[in-house]
Image (cartoon, rainbow, N blue to C red; front, side, top):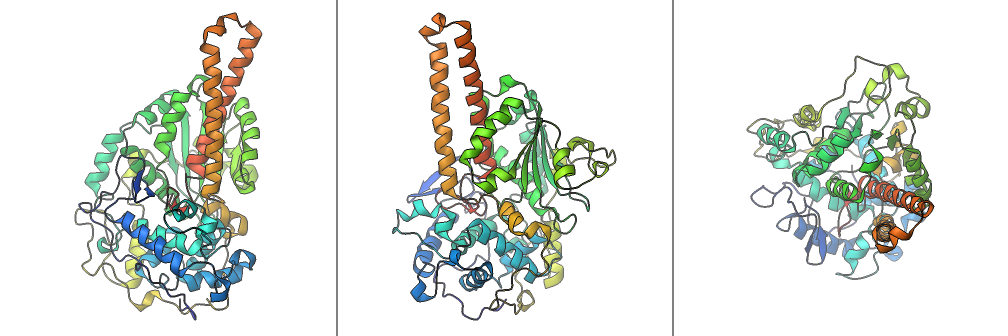
Length: 521
């Protein structure tokens, strides 16, 4: 893409290499680290990622701050086409880089034209940031870090730059985009051993021409306890692999539908919805935020009636897009596939309520043996020349850093603002916002977390009063009411925890800066 009037960027360039494991561990067991007032998550170390994030934010406050007098207007008030023009201007130095080209092949499909892929990817980022390209953060550093958590204030241009830092760490260009620490066959085998049967309830549905990819959790009492017992950060690393699978499955190229996350509660007894289990499950899911969220819906199958009642209350705390994204069913997930997506039951595996006995789901062991980015790696180096990365012992290391020449650039239509070249169903306005995840701002997360804290307080109060000295003087009717209230509060906490950890992913949607999430949270 050639951009006619690019914004001058004085911050760090797009990474041409990621850090070695010896320089910065891929992931640590600490949930959050504060680095010069800037919260870092387990995969954002203080040695490489953190310092560069600070530099990027500081440069963005200089170069990307909203200022109509400098030609940087509030693009939220412009048309989508005009906002895209500004997005290209603000990211002109990013568009022709090898890292961004590989990113497009990974997220939009290995064989897709890069011009179309770029339009689709940037459109999702803009949707997630409410069509705001430039920073409207009002305060200087360090207070600015608090506002960076709001994706609309941050703006899509900064959002993308922060995401690329973490992306380079996960898919290092100098190793052919195959991470020696994460993707090595021996490392994967060790991870399988470490998690054991902890994710026995998790299975994975490949994308086909008939249906999208899906993460399928058929939870039962044993599976819930096993998942909560997996040590961190092994659990976080495994779940991030699960997300990668869903993201890199070529749903757009096949069925045209983005991926789905299914949780089947049919075999979980009511007694498991307690504070201990909920807190433990939330801790396991809190680091499942490394990639842009690809799920078009979160389907809760075989939900108890009281769970559905709880959601009818909790949904008032959500945005419209978030409400639409959660599908609560009293039956199997097939209702969503069949009724909402028009997919015949005979085209769906039995595991999700279909009737096909020929299609099976992948197990955790099978999935963790895959290098999910391999198709994108192969396509990237086939098109650009040079040897690609591999999941073997040598990891396909390329001395030239996997660099790419002019073949990756395309004189595009950035000046005209033409966005979608061959729009697919998954990139329509509604689906784009859903794929990006979140009408996804930290502001929503803070609101939900506040409600969650409030509900926890009420639950603690209810439990204390029920278990306290006055409990013996309460009649059966009062005790029954209190028990019902306790169950309801517990279910609401469970629901909001899932919303925060899976839907909003505890931060922004594309990158975590401040505790938010940077395109990957």
